[in-house]
Length: 193
View 1 (cartoon, helix red, strand yellow):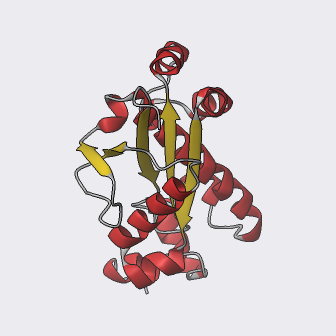
View 2 (cartoon, one colour; view 1 turned 90 degrees about the vertical axis):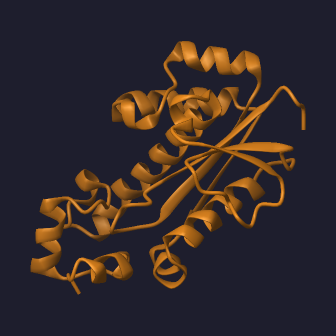
């Protein structure tokens, strides 16, 4: 892979109580990093949902390559969130046309099954455009899934809470019980099941 490319990877949904954890990897040239910065690509948490949705097609258009991976609630319950997150990241990386020589991972934790060179950067999504772009791709992809799941799991306000354990979501769980997409391992710790 061309050395001038920056390869960033990030996850979203790690702390949710419902649904999968998503990961995305984005490969950017120096030139396209600058273009995306001008468009306002930054840490997805600092952007409005509308701005993230507007940036997604620009990122996909300007990325040399990208990949999205996920791990299900069932995998999270079986393997634990750390291993499930690594699995989602490996699945995203495997979708790239070429194995990158180096990746920039958001956060302090290594992707243990990855054999290539990786740099772990705390707050990488606010320091590297490729990581920020990966955070946007992962967030919009997961949010879109949450909005689609609302129809099947109506009454849990998934379109609104995106599967996170908001006070409102927790009180609905107490009232209605859990679904097959709720993370039992997370809710057990909160004494909800």
